[in-house]
Length: 285
Image 1 (tube, one colour):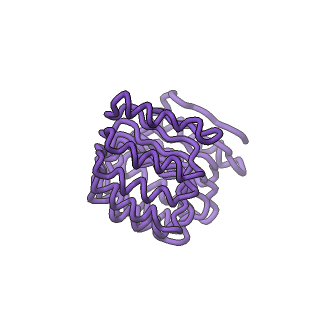
Image 2 (image 1 turned 90 degrees about the horizontal axis):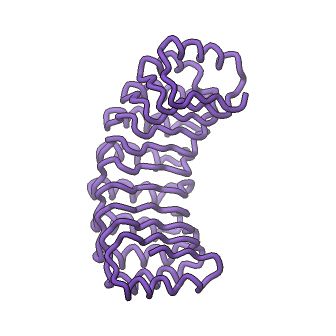
């Protein structure tokens, strides 16, 4: 079976029970799309026994809550679990579900892409997830934590995970409040040669010139980095020399997004002039 999509259709618990029966008759579902189906925890409970058969599972905007994630964690712990991509954005998740999810991530061998964007995991929730990321058996490659009320209080734990996790290549921390102190802590981890990050999103994080040198110095050594998003922060012309050095030194960099900062017209010109310095390089200011 290829893709089953019920996106934006309101599914009752009875609908979910019928769907569960259908999935139970299939060997594998390549993609089950239930985004914004209002299934909540009760509907998810009906689907729980068969979710491990799906490869891609889209459950965004369903308000499954912490209790729903506990049901999902059971599917992730199933030794026959085939889920490699799980989308749980906007599901009213808090730190109360983080322990269950972290436990599942520590044992699961299939999941490589996890989207937890626009929830309320907070610093305490991400600290618990970081424990799982430090586990050498954790296979997560893409982790999206945008819009989760994160501050510099969780940055040390995230940095520890970045320093030890060799599979994580895509980390989205946008729409948080990590601030300069948080990014300085992350920069220490980014210098670690074991960190293989390729795409880093730090848009809308209240960053200023104070962290630009640390971040640029760390990423100059990161020849795996391809995409860096620093949109909607408070960088000024004082950061231009550090950013120029990063762009010129990191030869793997393909795209850097810098618009909606506080550069002067002259500062923008200095950054935009680097567009032609390397074939295929995109500099958006």
